[in-house]
Image 1 (cartoon, rainbow, N blue to C red):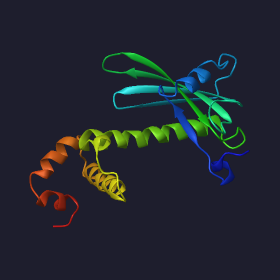
Image 2: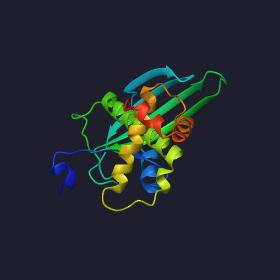
Image 3: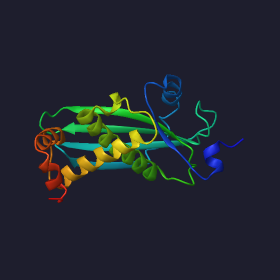
Amino acid sequence: MKPPLASRGAHYIVIVKGNQKKLREQLKALPWQPVPLQSRIRESGHGRGDIRRIKVCTVNNLLFPGARQAVQLKRRRLHRKSGKVSIKTVYAVTSLSAEQATPAQLANMIRSHWQIEALHHVRDTTSAEDASQLRTCNAPRTMVTWRNLAIGALRIAGTQKVAAALRAISRDPKRPLALLGLT
């Protein structure tokens, strides 16, 4: 039986975190040593240098419906100021087969997911989004839209510290309108 997403032509890639212990243990236990390194990406910025290495293998019988490939992504980060090196291993599963997505494409998909998480982190730390009690109708989606608009407008204006800028703008009701060019 095909998973419902695949029957509609949709696919997924899921980052496996600590709250999925059995699946994470299953992925860690895969024989990664003989799997060749399939993609290596080097980037620098924000005072650090990153090297991300990816290994991908075809799987079946994972504790996740429809999983066709398992991904091991190792990120080595050098913090230039402190000289500190950190290495983090991230696991993921995807319903995409090896013919549908190359390791480099999977690495880009995971990187795109991190960019979305970064925006959520800003919304949560500046607006306590995760603690919001709005749960009915379109209220949650509407508030996310307004928060994204505010963050986007501040970023376009060159703001680096969103929380401080939001506090400053909120002190004068004309400032948000001026930021949006509506005065």
